[in-house]
Length: 480
Image (spheres, rainbow, N blue to C red):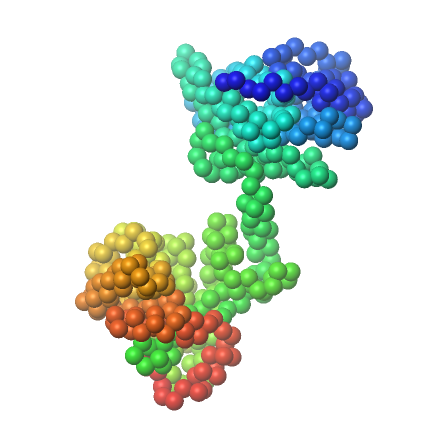
């Protein structure tokens, strides 16, 4: 493909001056001059150049970036293309490490040949290369360079007598804001590469500052969450669940919160997904279940006439843990609460079949007398045979079926809710509608036959003391 011929003479000159000032007299390997550099000393070659490919290494790339963005450099925007070969480990394993080395050398030669005068290519990792682009059109030129790189990498090559095709993912970064450090541009390109790799093979993505900030925040959450558990920063709030016919308090759902020392109170959406990805969700789940059961025991002791059901969410990895049901049995025994007053919510997507550990867990829990609810029903991969064969007690409608109830979409949602309620009642199951916020929504789910209702209309998540006050004010006992 035709690339813009962007002059880089002054940029190269400044980079060479910077390298010289740093104690290395070497210059750059210019595009098309692969392997022809003549370093003054072998030690400098080892420091500034990659020994396998002859390309500049990461250290030399940083020197070039410093020179290109210095106050004395030509005021041209500078961007990066950071690429990673797809499946390079498999090539090493299949064809051997010598073949992998030959592949890297071939890719280095191709990149040096295809890139224009406005580009500097460096090897910056095992199977990673980074291209410095001195561009005049910002994203346009960087994107065209990335396209040329991918086309060059895709061309088949021979390894061990076999034709092999490889691809590469590329992260692209445009010039950072004024005053940013050189490392910021490298970090941006690396962040963009992560986005490209998440999209699959042979992909390219431009740096997204919002996504990068989100990724950093998630990393910080993952780092701090174990400490939060140790320091007791997690706590529970409880959202009321009421009987549809009377509005009387039937139970509560335990919802975890994090009292973050700097960011204030965080809801579960901000840290539970991170806990699931990092393997901390079982520890968080144990905290939630332990705290909820202890609270249920207190309410039971203070309000013996109210059979308040405690509903607790169970993460897929918890339900898939062979020890989980035993842990629940131990908690019930320790807290001395009636098993029928504990309801465990397991997402529909966790129950893809009628075999396996999850279904065994459900059967064991039901054998203990614990109530089992299928959470977010209607959004997963429903296997209706589960409803017939598993000891499930309740279906909890996904909130998206409840929220609209207006216009054509609302009529469709109402028809779906009606169908689910009829199915559930035909199987002897109860139905909870969550996400109910308005009187109209409450009237609709009540008319459609839902047994229980949860949502802001009947109470937001609240502290245990608020539930205590509600229990004291109840005129009559609530019986499950």
